[in-house]
Length: 320
Image 1 (cartoon, one colour):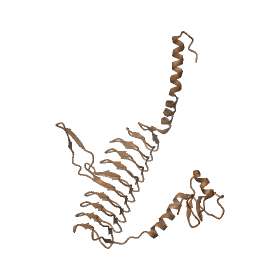
Image 2 (tube, rainbow, N blue to C red):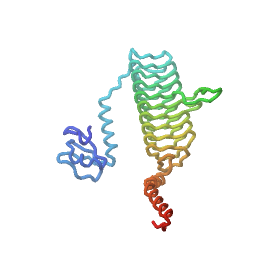
Image 3 (tube, rainbow, N blue to C red):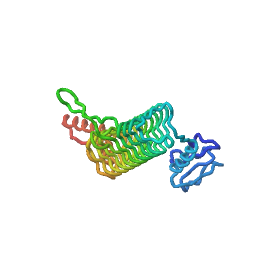
Image 4 (cartoon, rainbow, N blue to C red):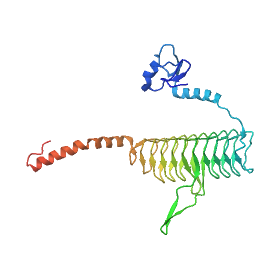
């Protein structure tokens, strides 16, 4: 498997974006997955027509990558597993340096990477892949087929303080994080435990690298949360929501199903579902585009006003 411009006569690639049409015409790949209706192509290259080339290529990659990946059950002798942990060494894999604390449970087919820590009474479901240097704190619950990239922290304390007597007094965070099936969390992202109750990540949601999710946040099913997003505490996000890079979302808000928040949007109020929002504060996309267009016109408007003012001060007719 290779990109169009790097593929050779023993590689397969895909063409799914017109921006790469030039690379497609010049590729040396043995075969290229293309959208239906695409007839042209470089000489000697087989074309495989499908509805969604990117998705089809992902299926091929998964197939061949799975063929090279091995899962060998067992607990490494340099792992630390508390006798009270609930695991079957013949059905899970625990790498060197990992720590599995008392009462923690691992589902069949789950792999815990080097130097990761599974806290007391935490639950990790079946076929999960917890990579290196991950922390899952006490009592947090992961569903099946969850992937945590290196450095993820699940269940860190929520950011809760009360100001009293001239000091910020820490509020105990006694809730948990609950993550649904088929969720993936990117490297060095953090999900805070609830002050009480649960911080929830819904089934199928995909979270990118360097994302911060505050305490008691509820994120629905099959959402996409892109890198450098920050979501403040107690906000509720619906299903099938896309949050683009560097979006900031305030606390105690509600974002409806099937919203899209474009890059660097700042959300300060509740947003109804089914819309695209942009800007700071976030507003419907078309409204934000009109506002930006008017801002770009401001220098001309200012120059025009100055010309009119000068004409009036000189006693001349204010004709534009």
